[in-house]
Each structure stands twice: as C-alpha cells, then as structure tokens.
Length: 80
View 1 (cartoon, rainbow, N blue to C red):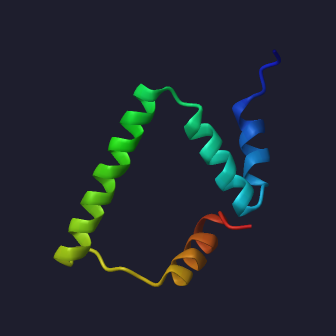
View 2: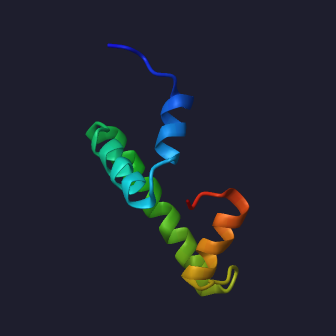
View 3: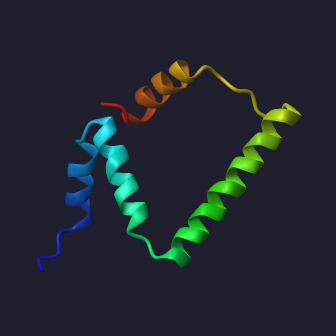
C-alpha cells in the first residue's frame, strides 16, 4: 500500500465542496475505533456543554448563522 503524505490528502480534501467534505468527515469518524470515538464524543459533549453555559451566562454572544459563515469564509477561506 502506497503511503500518501498527509499534506497532499489535506489539499485534495479541502478542494472538495462542503457536502463532500462533510461526508469525508463522517467516514473518518466512523473509521475510528470505539475507544477513540468515545473520547471524541465526550470531548464534543464537554465543549457543547461549556458553550451552552457561556451563552446562558452572557459570557459570549451568538450571531446569525449566515453571518458566522461569511466571517469564517473571509478569515480562513474555509468555504469554497
């Protein structure tokens, strides 16, 4: 099996459209073993709980989703 450098894989993955990248993420997460997946799931749950508390307390403010996507696109060019 030929080993492909991660940078090359990343470049190809980032060139995919949004829906294809989302499918790729799902495939990669599904490929993790259950122990790794469990850690990942707990980490996401912890982050979501923290963010919820920050919003409720007023520590952070929310913004409209479309505006957020525009900001992310401008700063990191993540949206193609």
